[in-house]
Each structure stands twice: as structure tokens, then as C-alpha cells.
Length: 272
Image (tube, rainbow, N blue to C red; front, side):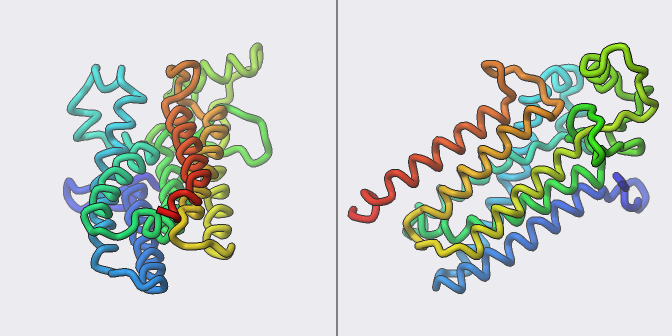
């Protein structure tokens, strides 16, 4: 775990940023391959890549602010500009989707054809990008646990040391009343869970036979991703503040509903 890889003067290069850049790059290369394979314009792919980066960075920051609004009110500039944490990948997906939908409509290409082509790249990007939370220990880990594969992040941006993380201490005391709080509290490595689940999704998207253009592959991506994120949230530290759910769970439900609707209407869409 190395939150900061190296420093050049006042410039600090963090492991999360490097991992995110790697995730974007490899995801884009996979999408480019899929575009060529299906006879689509790679220049359009690069336009979508740019919008995905823009939407991903801005949307993930907005989502983080919504999930941690009290921190934002206490220090707006610190959260928006100076914080080395403060990103929620799910929020980035939402804004990136919106911008890419606009660009696809402008291109005149069938939306669901490009969405089907792009789906594996989205899965690969998330599989790799979420691992940045492990390398940096940025607080996206889960609740305290005693499972054999539990992890600690003593040197993380948001450490699991009991002396430095009172929220984690309170959670441990709630889950294990009467037990002594460890110096370094073991937690669920939820980013690893999400990465593993999305890797399985990636394999299905790449190697199952999908009719490109019907929206089935994109719908499957949305549904799988929404379900996996919804259930992982139960063992993450995000507060339950949206109808008894986290904001990520609410978005996960939206992804699931969208996936079901896209799949259910694919026949009618093909006839039009």
C-alpha cells in the first residue's frame, strides 16, 4: 500500500491516480479493438473516451460530495480542490454515460450498437480502477470484520488505525460489543470484492456470444454491475441516508431497472 508513489517538489503522484489512468488507458484500448472488430469509426471512440474521462472525474467528485456532504460544508475548498481522496467511481459512471449518450446521438450511430461495443471497456476500467482504493487506502474499504482475508490500511490516506479513525472504532464497538478495539482494525477489502465481481462480468461480456446492436450486452453489464454494487454496499462504511439505503445503492437500483428495461424492449427496438 503506497498512497503517494513519489513527489517532485510540491507535486505528489498518488497511486490512486496512476491506477485510474491505467484503467482508463487499457479500457480505451479494449474499446478501440471492439470498434475495429465491429467496423465502427475509431475517431468516434476517441471522442467518447475524452467525454468518459471528463464525466468520470467530474461526476465522481460530485458523487463524493453528495455522499459526504457534511465534510463538504465544513471545508468546501478542501474537499473540491485540495483533497487527495474524494472520488466515487459510480458517480463518474453516471456523468460519463450522460455525456457519451449526447455524443452518440450527435454521431447518428445506433446508440445500442455502440453501447454493446463499449460495455467490455467499462467493465475492464472498473475492474482495474477500483483497485486504486486498495493501493491508496482511501477509505473505500468496508466495515470491521474477522474474516481470514480481512485487510488493514495503517498507512492509508484514511488509515484503519484506531487512534486515527474514530468512525471505524465506533463501527467495531457496534459490531463486536465488549471486545477490545485492535490497534489496527481489520476491515472487509470491498474494492477487491468489486474488482473480482466485475472481472467475472468482463469475462462474460468478452467470451459469451452477444448479438451486437440489440442492447443485450449493455443491459447485462448494467444489471450485473448494479446488483453487485447494491449488495457490496451493505458491508461498506457509507451511511444509509437515502430511504434506508446508501446513495450508491439507489444508483445501483437505477442501473438494474435500466438494464431490465433495455433487455425487455430489445425486440420492439429492432423492428423500428
